[in-house]
Length: 397
Image (tube, rainbow, N blue to C red):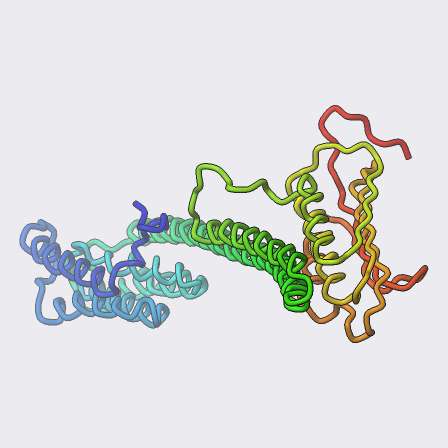
């Protein structure tokens, strides 16, 4: 039987008083019936007998918080009941529940030692106590052996149940941790997507808005071009934000409204950068081939973020070079600029470059960023490993 969330129901899920009430009822009713119908001689149930039959179930109320104490009280009451010579009946129900609860609580030494001590008392003290005709007539070494076997079977079964429960709990904990880890990774992925989309498009909007304000009175036609670029950038930003929010809301759309971000849309990305006033050169080498979705998206976002940083920090009249190389070891992406922005304008402290590093690290690749050593400007270089298709030959080293 499972609950709403698929977790298996266990007896421990019941309120603590349910089992003691059930056990107490059976012990009292069953022992009263046995007191009337058992043919062998025994001491009739009296007030002390009913008090002992009630003590065990009452002690079970504390089996979860104080399992060792509860087991000690239960075994003491049971031993006194048997030594007194009362009829057997279902008097062993309380010890069974107490032993299982003690083993389940991890008190394994107490679970073996306390019943063992009680059995020793029954086997050694019983023949020498002066009261109780049942004890004198019927308790023997055979009874001790039977009860000993019963205890071993019960304790072994309780240990097996404990081990199975601990394994099940560990599986549940592992599954819950994995679900939390996946949820955390998904949140980071969505945060990176939102940052890349919004940072790039809003940077373009900011640049074009400044151009439009500057040219509004003197050259309105060029201002119109800037406003058109603002419209396109805002439209794309809204579309991509809706797609990310759709993932958050788990909304299934029949078909995407725009192509997925990837190198197939690189020309559109470069065109928007050129509209923002950046002179962009592109170089593609190697044999283009289909890329895994994660690699394709990462390459696109790295170039997008690099161009966004160029727009923000490189200064006016900047030239950027975007290189994409398909190699045997993977896909290589490089973005260089010759910007002369102030040192304080270098892209540091934001989320863009850390987001690039997270993307590349998730794919097992490498990335380097920083000021160029061969010229003025900034560089971004990334290597993204691309698995070889099944059946294709490995590159020769």
